[in-house]
Length: 538
Image (cartoon, rainbow, N blue to C red):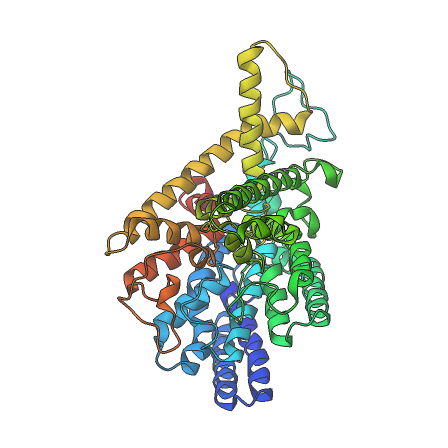
């Protein structure tokens, strides 16, 4: 643990390259296997040399160093991950390979390439990088962001030096004790070193994360998915990256049963309650009363009903246009398919995964209506749970703002009323809502700035808006779910897919969107914390 954080990540990245190398050797992609194997050896050697050069002068890690390392890892580690990818696709170039790895590592899942033109080992590598990116965020949220009270933890952080849920608040004669910062002397112990916190968090999260991935892979195999497709679906679902080795919906081979499995395994992205650590985020002891889960259930139900009624009314209008239309209206299966397609897509985009249901196109054909793109984009902006693999604004912040708005409406009717709900509920309605509003404004400003920068080139405003939202919410498949005006100013090689909204963009636009993915993954508030004087104080 005395090695620099980036050196340790480089070693992990090099060792992970042996997985696609072995798979490429098995499927007779010998050239790709050599590229991954030689890249792993080269990176291991370079990391070992840097490690030997720095081991003589160890320096105790600080919280700000780890947060800076997280930012550097998202921008620089993809350069290492892109080496075998660029070697395997000589016509794509290092820049496009770096962009693809940034998209995978941030669990965005946007791709410059057509799924049917990429070799299978590269699909495995993209899915594996996305899976490791999801694991990295689950670990870093507890080990790095939680002590700094950013990344959503500020919503539940008590202004007092005690736990509000089980202890009484201090009396008026007893001044409140502010929580010490990580720069305080009592935190400067070896066990509280950021590197040790990362290791302890990784040891707790990895068995659950890997176990759920393995379980989902086996279930999808039993339901009829190909081994590679099932593995990539499992990794893409748990990491909410939405990376797929095939073109098509989530249940193309396994059907609705496979989609039900995906639906079930998307639920852990709604709350940190399903993962080890993050006890300070629990507003209630009972899962059924969890604010994030309640908010998610309400949003998914509302959007599903809206989408179903939209298609239902569209089908009614189509009933009088031809003799075959009444048969469609009488078909209960079309109605159920439309309902399931809306339900699956609502949860998929709320968790910023971006899978589409096999019944999604069927429901559109039933009603003759186009895709409701703004609804999907709105769900992606709300995002999943705090300290999970999902992106977006996060459900806890949305819940705090909703409770604050509800309380303000009550005060209009009863100005002298006293709200109940307990200390945590009052905390969410007051300070939590205030902090959530600040983050929401920062997020809206990030979208505005990204759209303005993307629009510098000759790109339609609607296309620039959706691409910016997809990048900042880490929901790459959102660009493919909404009709966009394609741009053909650039190329990523013979395997590129400019019609999907990403590959045909100019290099400058791709760079802006890549950094927007990083900002969306680490959150604007955490990056702004780097500029705080208190953060840099010794």
